[in-house]
Image 1 (cartoon, one colour):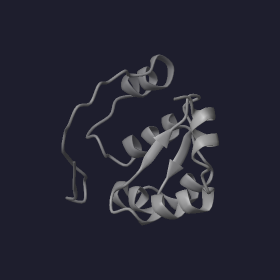
Image 2 (spheres, helix red, strand yellow; image 1 turned 180 degrees about the horizontal axis):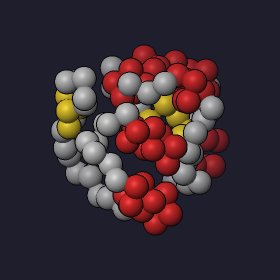
Image 3 (cartoon, one colour; image 1 turned 120 degrees about the horizontal axis):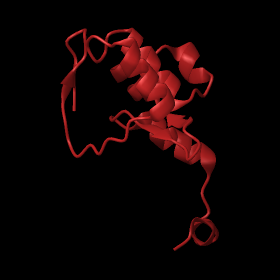
Image 4 (cartoon, one colour; image 1 turned 45 degrees about the horizontal axis):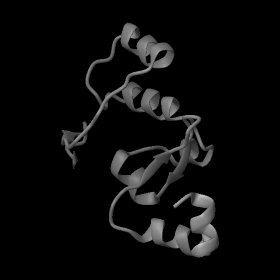
Amino acid sequence: MTTQRMTRAFPVDSALLNAVVEHVDQGILMVDANGYVAVCNQRAIDLLGLPADLMRSHPSFEAVKRWQMEQGEFGTVTEALLRAIKYEGINVEILDYERQRPDGTVLE
């Protein structure tokens, strides 16, 4: 069923959807087709330690990754890696993984 047909069949109240996204126990961060963060709930911001001012600006996912790397989220990052991410992109298929943030928090 196309999104347009689903919307007609199941009218959606955006305020209700926003409330649901904000109150789930999991962090939700969704990126649109243009590479910008379209949805990010407070739980995701808290789990990932993201700055609220960055997330209020509806940043590109690239900007979020860059900020995380600059904070040491993925260990030591070289300039070559930063350039590769910015200009070439990194295509990764993630099935399931855990990683430990610098503050000791384990994210699944």
